Amino acid sequence: MKPVYIAGAGMTKFGRSEWSLMELASNASLAALRHAGLGKIPVDSVVVANMGAARVNRQTALGSALVDQLALYPAMAEAVENGPASGASAFKVGCQAIASGMADVVLVTGVERMRVVNGLEGTDFVASLSQPEVEYIYGVTLPSLAGMFARLFMDRFGVERRHLAMIAIKNHENATKNPYAHIQLAVTMEGILTAPEAVVNNPPIATPLHMFDCCPVSDGAASIVLVSEEVVGKLGGPKVRVAGIGQATDTHAVHEREDPTDLKAVRIASEKAFSMAGLTPQDVDVAELHDAFTILEIAESEAAGFFGRGEAHKAIERGETKLDGKLPINPSGGLKAKGHPVGATGVAQLVELAWQLRGDADERQVKNAKIAYACNFGGFGNNVVATVLRREEK
Amino acid sequence: MSDKVYGAKCTSCGTVNYPARAVCRNCRSETFEPIEVGGEGKLLTYTDVYALAIDYETRYLRLAIVELDNGIRVTGQLLDDDPKLGKRVRSTIGVVRKPGEVSIMGLQFVPA
Image (cartoon, rainbow over all chains, first blue to last red; front, side):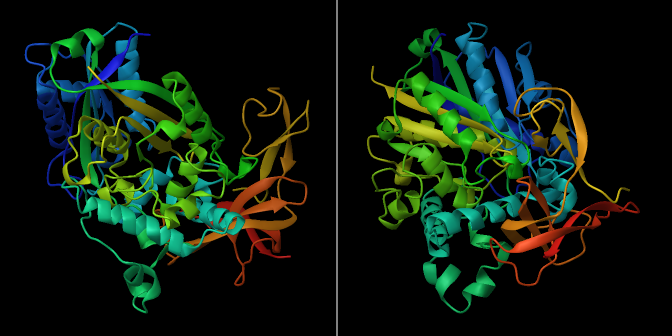
């Protein structure tokens, strides 16, 4: 396999957007292309990540549409739909094109514009990824799967609601330092858990999870320019190499898993990614995890190998995952506060990590970050893509 | 509209696949016989979900995963005002979703 590098990364602000689907995708792409500074080097291929446009925006064939917007013809183009893991899946497809020698420059853009539909429709479009005959028909939504997972996980490992609140507080705090974040509002333990008015501020969404345990519904786009070794040599700037990618699947219905608290696909995908990179979880300086629900940040950090089973909430209590801690997790604010435009999320995680490794993360910069890890969690853990990035010294 | 819920029992290794699938997840055999899913079991986990999908007009739904006494696990709706992890429950069949005029029947659990 040929080495693959990230030459540029950009995104739109996440939140409610007035921009159309294609305006979002174009603006993120242009930001990444400018960041890469390709000059006259052509883009060989465009990969768009998206989950719901066919349903909520009534638009399909997004790869071709983006090529047209950016006038990149005759570049190759396609769209990748892999539920909430669409972003990292598209990134993987882009890396494969360069690793195989089929392309030297690939633009990977994730986009979702889901605030155009009402809450019920929006929740339903995401719920349509659940198993149709044994989950979806009962009214299963993603928050409900997370609620059932959380109750079991918390009971088994002694995780309390205050631990979940600590994740929310940390990620909201990080997001105040991220101009691209959907919600730039610091929250306190009193405000969301212990004060009497917390029951009003923080209503239940899927018990034991409350509003501040769940990501917002966002519009947004994120984009990365991938290049070959030959091209990266022609460009200036720091070299960020895609050191490893791992992907794994699990049963569609959550109830069929031997241990429903075990995120097996996260474990296997992470092991594969670290093995490809020749690194271990202990080498990681900064991580972006898929905290669509606060409980997932805890469970994924264990399954990825950063902490032992049942240990992550204790590390959070000790502040180890804060921006200035031993292993900063979700410096961007995570899905919790940065927002979760579903198809854009996996790309946005890698945008943040590329910025971190290049030293471009401003106020939320993790000092001297060299190795980064991302977990993009699709379905309810039935399709997971893990990525390890590494800054190469010249 | 069916008043029974079925899984697929693998004719070679006996594993119940629920949902039914084309290939047995245990032994990769492709032949199955239908087996009715339901009966008594214990509550593995549950949630009161307020973030509902279309087709529901209620304020929240109580959903659960139940481990049946024969080891099969199922997802369903929980009709119990006092749920607790590990509590004994039994299945009934009722309307679980109504997209338009259609009534979809499925598993509901009540205290055993």
